[in-house]
Amino acid sequence: MSSSALPYRPHNHQACVAQALADARTICQQHNARLTPTRERVLELIWQSHKPLGAYDVLAVLAEDGHNAAPPTVYRALDFLQQYGLVHRIASLNAFTGCTHAGKSHNGMFLICRSCGNVLELTAPAVSSALHRAAAEESFRPEDVTIEVSGYCPRCASDDAHG
Amino acid sequence: MSSSALPYRPHNHQACVAQALADARTICQQHNARLTPTRERVLELIWQSHKPLGAYDVLAVLAEDGHNAAPPTVYRALDFLQQYGLVHRIASLNAFTGCTHAGKSHNGMFLICRSCGNVLELTAPAVSSALHRAAAEESFRPEDVTIEVSGYCPRCASDDAHG
DNA sequence: TTGCTAATGTTATAATGTTGCAAATTCCGC
DNA sequence: GCGGAATTTGCAACATTATAACATTAGCAA
Image 1 (cartoon, rainbow over the protein chains, first blue to last red):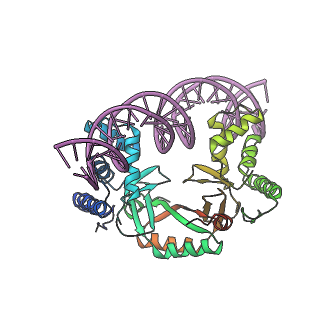
Image 2: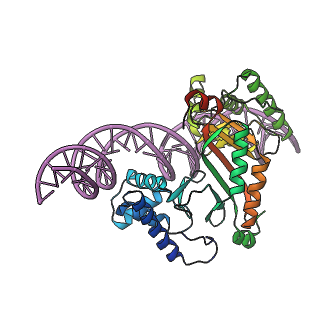
Image 3: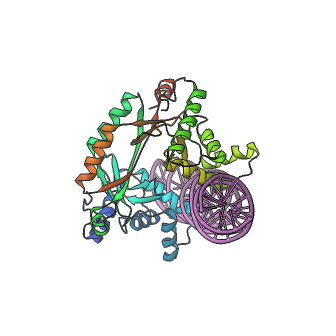
C-alpha cells in the first residue's frame, strides 16, 4: 500500500493520489468506517500536493466546488481522516498532510522544507527507540509523539545555498 | 546555570524561578539585550509553574497587574524571550514554557503530561543524533527540530492507572 | 539639545478552531 | 419496504490564537 516517492523528486502524482484514495477505501472498509463523499473529497484535496494544507485552504476549495461548507465540516472530515491514520496534522504549521504510510503502524517524523513547503514523512525506528528510551529514563509513558523537522530539502538546499 | 529538578517532583519552585530570572539577566547582559520590566514580568509569569502558559493567559495576568496590555505586547515579549532561548513554544499546545537549559546550546525534547499538564524539557543526545542521521539519509538539512511527547508523567501514571 | 534606534501602545483584523443544536441521511433488524 | 437508532451533515454563532499597521515613548549617544 501507498507510494514512497519523495515529494521533491519528480513522480507520478496522479498515481500517488489515486493510490492514497484506494488505500483509504480499503482501510475504511476494514474498519466499517464510512468514507463519505465529503471525507473523500477532503482527503483528495489534502493529497493534491505534498505541501500541507490548512483547514481553511480546504474550505476555500470546497467553496469553489460549490460546496457551501462551514469550518466544522472540514474539521470533522479531518478528524475522521486522522482517526484512521489517513492524514496527519503538522502542529508547527497548523496544517494537514496525507499519510504516506497509511495502514501500517508507524511512528512518523516529518521533514518540512522551508523553501518549497514540501513535507516528507518518514519512519525512523532508530529515532523512535532512542526517544522511548529517553522517556523511559524519566519513567514517562508516551502516548503520542510529534517530531517535526524544519529545514531545507536537497533540491532547495542546492538551488539556493541557504546557510 | 538553571535548575534541573523534575517539575512533578517536589522542589523549591521559588528558587527555580529566581534562578531562571537571574540566568535571564546574565544572558541578556552578555548579548547586550534589554530585559525590560515587561519582558521580565512575562518571563516570571511563564515560570510560575511548569505548566505551559498561553499568550492570553499571560495577558490576563498582566491585566490583573493593572498593566493594560494588548496581545502584541505579550507576543513581542515572548518572541524576545524565545530569541534568547529563555522560553520555548510548545507547538502542540500553543503555549509557552520556561527553558530549563537556558544558555546552553541544546536540542530540547518535551515530555508533556496529559493529566497534570506539567512539562519536562530534556536534552537527549541519542535522539538528536539518530534524528540527524535519519535526516542526512534523505539529504535533508535540519534547521529547527520540534519534539513533543504527550503522555503520562510517573506520578499521574501511578495515580490514575491510565491505559 | 538633537537625532537615531529600540521598545511599547493602540486599534483593528486575520487566522485557526469549537460548541450546540437541528435536519438529513444511513444502517439495521423486522 | 418500514421504523427507530445512530451517524453524519448543515448551520450559526462564538472562542482562541496571532499579526498588521501605525503612532508614541524611552534609551542613548553625538
